[in-house]
Length: 238
Image 1 (cartoon, rainbow, N blue to C red):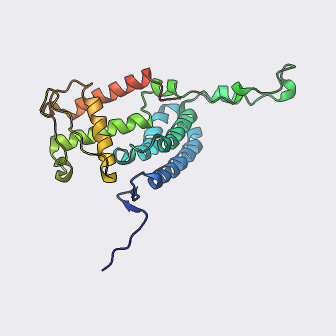
Image 2: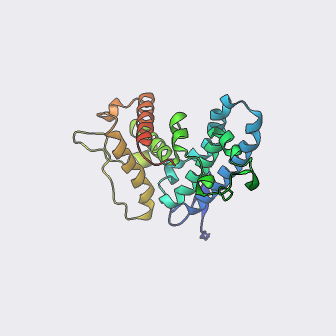
Image 3: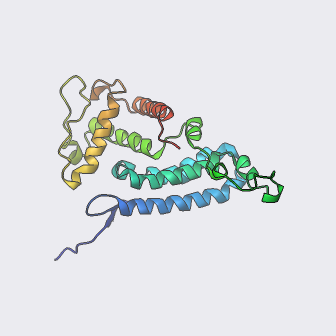
């Protein structure tokens, strides 16, 4: 029986392509996020603002986070598409809607002489960094780091699945949580290499000396707190 060669295949909701560059899957994610954004736009008019964060996590972030530890290490240009939609839905739910509407409530004839023509400031979008900070939300890049580290921790502690655990070699030096990175030259190694590299960069910041000291709830709390702090101090959100 011959096996037909295809340009893409779907497994557990993730679309794989021959080069593992995740173009097709990110196209699929972007489509789902746009549908979710349209749904949120329609229902947000009838739901109290106290539920907006729940709506965001339920209808939007759930799609954004699904298997992000697999595809979230794609090129930044591709990930920027998901980040753009994430910022759009945050402006929709948590942005200053009144200020946005006030900009559109006057016509050219009612503006002072010499100010009829709208400048670049009128078309400038609201910055989302304060929104991320105020509501303690991670952007898509930090969601990838957060989910990747949680997945690696489960693999190290539970030794499962064995097919992945057997490919992980922990350092025997001072920080025994660091993973010795393998060759990333082959395409099938790129995603795993990126995830392990993310783990190595973050685990040293959390003061967890060895795998036996990993407690999942504590790890999640420390990891999210550190990512929120670095996001607050950095410039990923615009």
